[in-house]
Structure formats: structure tokens, C-alpha cells
Length: 178
Ligand SMILES: CC(C)(COP(=O)(O)OP(=O)(O)OC[C@H]1O[C@@H](n2cnc3c(N)ncnc32)[C@H](O)[C@@H]1OP(=O)(O)O)[C@@H](O)C(=O)NCCC(=O)NCCS
Image 1 (cartoon, rainbow, N blue to C red):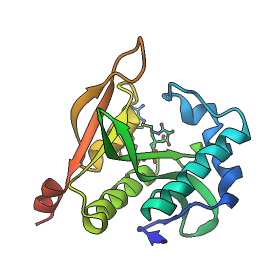
Image 2: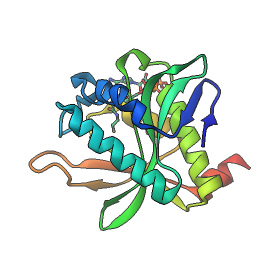
Image 3: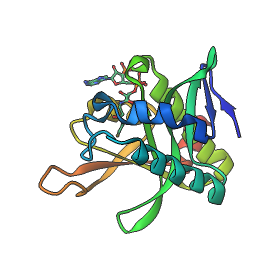
Image 4: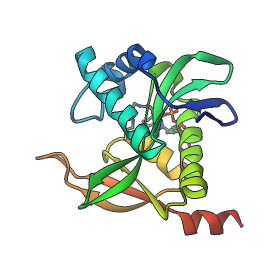
């Protein structure tokens, strides 16, 4: 269940991650571009975590809790791939949210590359999607550094500019690597 990258450990979340999850998802700074805003009650974090655990239970994969290899006891973020419903079908979606102290060190890109590698080589799915607000330039940059391409828009926030939909396809990634 545990995976490693050059600097990170990616592991299945547990109920013991609740406080870390609430700290990160309840921080206004990590939700600047999230139309729903930060979580305000720990019960919301508990529901989110229980949803992730149910996804792991049914699918065998899902959102990872992320630590640095050198500090495996401290969660710096959450992210990975899970199934979500949008644009009329269930899609495998890449997402991430890191604690502010962990920003600017390439961790989101490292996580994204590992997640796409996992999806294409172990789940062997044809494509992975991601949705980002149009003004979220750092996240757009992460998706593009991970090799994803903008393919569509999604009107998911009433009265505001549409989100951008990104995709990585297995065929493109495999042919790029050959
Ligand atoms: C967005 C987020 C995941 C980025 O994580 P990170 O670990 O700092 O990302 P990385 O270091 O891998 O890459 C960030 C890139 O964006 C660039 N960047 C950062 N802020 C930027 C900005 N305001 N405008 C343009 N580019 C920006 C960085 O320079 C870097 O690109 P570079 O390597 O070419 O220099 C992180 O800020 C976060 O968790 N935010 C809160 C949650 C969130 O917004 N999640 C995404 C929802 S779609």
C-alpha cells in the first residue's frame, strides 16, 4: 500500500490522519481557489476522510497521505487519484492539497508524476483527468509539469468562469517515455 518517490512517502490514509487533514483542509490559505472554502468543523474532515477510506476499501487505491521520507511521522499533504463524477461520466481524477509550509519545493509535481505513473502502469487506465480553477496558476503549472494537457472546461461554479479540465493519456505518456 505504501509507495515512495525520490523524497516522499505516499501511503493509504488512516483515521489517525484526521487532525492533519483538518489542519490542512481547514486552512484558508490552502483553499484560496476552492469555491467551497476551507472546512470549518472537524466533523466535515471526518466525513471526507471516511469517504476516502470507503474508496480505498472498494477500489484498493485512492487519496494518499503524504509525508517526507525523512519525517514519516508528519503529514505534509494529501493527494492522488480517485474516481469522481463530472462531464457526465465517472473519471479518474488527480488532486492534491499540501500544507503551506510544504509549498514551492516541487512536492505537488513529484506526487502528480507518481500518481500518473501508478494510474498508467498499475491501474492500466487509459486516461487521468484533473480540474482546476482558471486563476490557479500554481496548480495549472503543476499539471502541465506532470505532462497533462488542457482539453475542456467545466461550468462547476455558478456565476463564475469555468474551471479548466486537464487530461493525461496513457498512450501519450508511454510514447513520450520510449
Ligand atoms: C497548488 C499546490 C498544490 C502547489 O504545490 P507545490 O508543491 O508548491 O507545487 P510545485 O512546487 O510542484 O510546483 C509549483 C509550480 O507553480 C509555480 N507557481 C507557484 N505560484 C505561482 C503563481 N502564483 N503563478 C504562476 N506560477 C506559480 C512554481 O514556480 C512552480 O513552477 P516551476 O517549478 O516551473 O517554478 C499547493 O500550493 C497547494 O497545495 N495549494 C493548496 C491546495 C490547492 O490549491 N490544490 C489544487 C486544487 S486544483
